[in-house]
Length: 158
Ligand SMILES: [Zn+2]
Image (cartoon, rainbow, N blue to C red):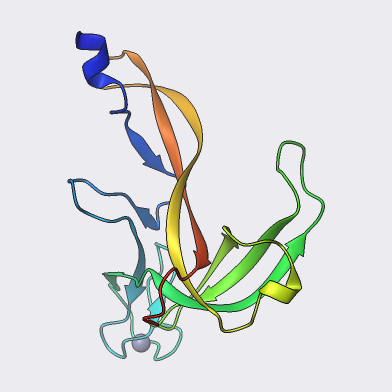
């Protein structure tokens, strides 16, 4: 049946432009940063016209960031807006490219006894909600909104 063929083939949208989703089977999602071609300093976020480290004026080169890093700092959040389950772990993760990423830590209890500064973490993506939008033919369809998180590394490589 035709309707079944498209089930599970929903389009996905990243929740933020720095998250890139797979466009072909076998690809993994990743984050992008922007690297100064003069000194190599790397930044998060589009739109930067120059490097604040060496003052070279762009263009900065888009680079794929590592999906593994280390937990720099975290805070256990006990109060949030309605609809956001608490407690959750707000964190800053350091990546090897020298950038720090704000994110939520998942797959671990929000318990300071289990969280260690510097612990290895890896990126995961999850659907956080869906949204109706019109496709190119003007037909409304449901797309999945995908967000990134970090979780404790699942193997001991790093
Ligand atoms: Zn620079």
